[in-house]
Structure formats: C-alpha cells, structure tokens
Amino acid sequence: MKQLLAIIKYDYLQRTRSYTFLITLCASLAIAYTFVPAPDANYSTIRIADYVGYYNAAWFGYVTAIMTSVFLSLIGFYLVNSAIKNDDITRVGQIIATTPLKTFKYLLTKAISNFLVLLTLVLVIFLMSILLFFLYNDGYPFEIMQFIKPYLVITIPALFFIAVLAIVFEVTFRKFTVVQNVLFFFVFAFLMLYTPKTDVQYGFDVFGTKIITDELQQTVHEVTNTDASKSLTIGYVIGGQEKPKNFHFEGYDFPTTFMASRIIWLVFSIALLFGVTPLFHRFSGKELRFAIKTKTVNVVATNIKDMEISTLVSATKNYSVLPLIKTEFLLMARQGKKWLWGFNILGMSLLGTLSTEIAHQIILPILWFIQVHRFSGITTRELANRMHYFTFSSYRPLQRLMTSQLVAGLILLVGLAMPLVVRYIILGNFHAAIGVVSGALFILLLAAFLGLLTQGKKLFEVLFFLLTYANINTIPFLDYFGALAHDKQYLMNLSVTVFVLLSSCILIRRKQLVTQ
Image 1 (cartoon, rainbow, N blue to C red):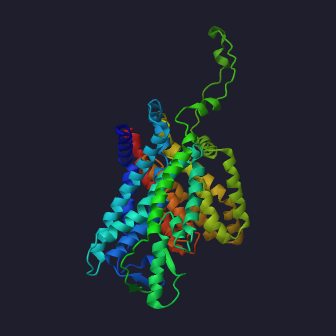
Image 2 (image 1 turned 90 degrees about the vertical axis):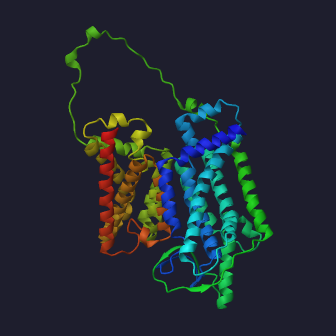
Image 3 (image 1 turned 45 degrees about the horizontal axis):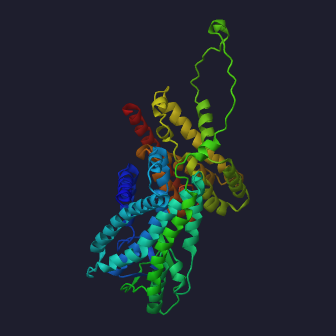
C-alpha cells in the first residue's frame, strides 16, 4: 500500500507542478467565474426559455456542478491522457517495470493520479462557486450542502470515469495519439446527445446532468404552464436575449436508483481498467525490437593514403531558408501513421463537395483538429528530443529556423483547406477565403506561443479541442477562421491578435536563445 501511495503522490506532484497545469488552473478559475453570469451580464449559461433561477445557494451549487461536469469532462481527457506516455519518455516506466508492482495496480495508480489532478481543478471551481454566491446572491442564506451534494453526486463520478477512460485509451491505442484524441471527441459528442426518457435511463448518463436539467424544465413548465422542454440551453449564449424572468429552484432529492447508478459508474470504470490490463505492454520494449529491421551493411576497408582529397565534394555555404521549410514540412507531413492521410484526403474531398456552410463550420475545424499531433509541438520538438543545443546554435535560428517552422505549418494547414479556399475565390467571396487563411495562421501561432510559454504541447491541445468543439456549436466570439458572418472589424481584431502572438513568440524564443 505504501508503494502505491508513493507512486500516486509523486506522480501527482510532478504533474501539478508543471507550467501547463498552473496555466490550466488559472484558465479554469477564469472560466468558472463565468459559469453563473452576473445579474447585468449579456450572456447566459443555463437558461430554460426566458427563465433562470433565483440566485440562491441551490442555483449556484447545481448550475456550477453541471457546468463543471461538462467542462472538465471536455478538457480533462486531453489534460491527463499522457500519464503512461510520460513514464515511457522519462524512463520511469522501465524502472517501475522491474519492481514486483502488479500491472493492474500500476494502471490504477495512474488513473487515481489522473483523477486527483482533475479533482484539484474541481476544488478550485467549487471554491469559486461559493465566492460567486456571496458576490451575486440577493439576500438568500448560504447552505453548504446545496454545493456539496451536486458536486459529489454529479461531478465526481463523471470525472473519475474520464480519468480511467484516458488510461484505457492509452493502453488500447498506445501508438495512435491522434486516434485517442479524435475518438474521444466523437465519444464525448455522443454522450452529450444521449437523451434519457425514464428514471432508469437517467442512470446511463455518465455526466449526471440530464436529470437536473429535466427537473429545471419541469419546474419552468409548472410556473408558466407551457411546454419549455425544447427551450433549454446549456453553454454560452451571447447577447440577443431579453432580460430573463426568475423562478425558484430549491435543489433536488436524487432518487435511490440514480444514486446507485453513480456508484455503478465508479465500479464500471474500475472494471473497464481491469479489462484492458492484459493489453498493457508494461514497458517491455518488445514492440520496439520487432519494429527494428536489421540490414546487412558491407563495409569496404579503404586505405586513407589512397584517397584523393581533390575528388571529395567541397563544402558550400547555403543560407537559404527553403531547404529548412521543406524539411520542417516533411517532418510534419510524415508524423503519425500513413493511413491517417486517408482521413485527410476524405476531409479535403468533403470541403470541395459539401455546401460551403457545412464545409466551413463543421468539416474544416475537424480536419484541422485531426492534425493537432503534427503542429502542436511546432516550437517544442527541439526540447522534447534534446536537440535544442544544436538547433539554437545554428546560423540565425530565430530568423531561419522559427520562420521555416511557421511557414511549413501554414503550408500544411492552408493546403488542407485549399479546396474550400478555391471555392470561395471562384464564388468571389474573398472575405471568407482570407478568414480561412487568417484562421490557419492564428491557430498555428497559438500553438507556437503556448509551446514556447509552457515548453510543452498539452495546454494547446486542450484549448484547441475547446475551440474546435465551440466552433462546431457555432459560438460566435470563438470563431477564429471566419465560419460565421462577420464585419470588417472581425478581420482587424484577428490581425491584431495574430500580430501580438507573433511578437510574443519572437520575444520568448529570443529569450530562450540567450538563456539556454
């Protein structure tokens, strides 16, 4: 038991002391602050028709618990889905493999560590929800159980399942990070679309939110005596709404069957982990040995005295950036399995055949998201492969190396979107075509900036997933590639953002060149 606790403790400390986690923690605080809008805010998060609940303890507790369950399930997987990979890279896994620690126990410790990382974020959001109550409430008494109960019943089981699912995906799809990311994207979307109709079916909702949202709709139905079942909105709806009316929500007494289902989800998660245990490689290295193809090399001994110096090729200087751009592009294009390009070709075909609205709003963000493993580490590959001492000492690394990386990444993203860009040019919609190219530049510079800032790619992958999901759901203020109708000010704001990101990348890389 001490051995297990020690592994959990040090793994948790190692992950929570990283810059990525610190920035994610700050971002979670900022987002949690928006879970319950201020009384004069021009947006809503949970709204039934034209109604929101009075700002009492129950409303704050249940609304923030629902938003936390969905929000952290959304980004939590991408935040913790490299626990085993990190042990493999740092060679800690090989050390653990030599100990008598059982495979299932090792996987369980990684899952618990994942859960504790997510639980830390939950605790921060929980405290923020209490702070918001005291900031916004209108004389209602503070009831701590109205906060504890929904978080305990709704949020905790959902995040435990996500923590285990991250380990299951790592074990099952060890070499295919992009498959893990894309598959979870569709799994999450499917789970969000699940609509229970009976009390028993509520137990199959892993996020645990449907039973509360249906209760809120029923409460509004009783208040208005109208059908509000199709008017529920969960998420950020900006502007264009009248001032909401209020109704009383005093909390909810969860039925016994639902409480039992939350426990069953915990048991099911552990059973799922146990089921994939035989698939775990336990850092054996067998796959690596089988992957190495031995080649016979014939070495011909040559007398150094017989060599003619004049026949050797003389070294020439070439300061052109074009060979570097070619090399960086090939590094990105060849990363991952070749069969993944089949999806890219399919996505490009859909961009050229489907309606421009569907192609721009749905197909393009998904197609770019599939490439996240190719360009998320665009400015961190040197550090990850211990090559930064060599590359940073090369000729003009800032002007040549960083420029080649950004240009190669831009060629990749714009090249994938080219069928849509060409269609817009043919239609004379140059504004939309410029929006696509500007969006590619923005997301590329965001990856470069966050990589330089955190010296890792995890934070960008989390934020990019959020951006992709938000754009598929057509949230206007997160549209970074012009999929929705915008005025000229949109391109101006996007241009300023791109300039700020580019300037920040140059400043941070210049500092790295001096200090390392």
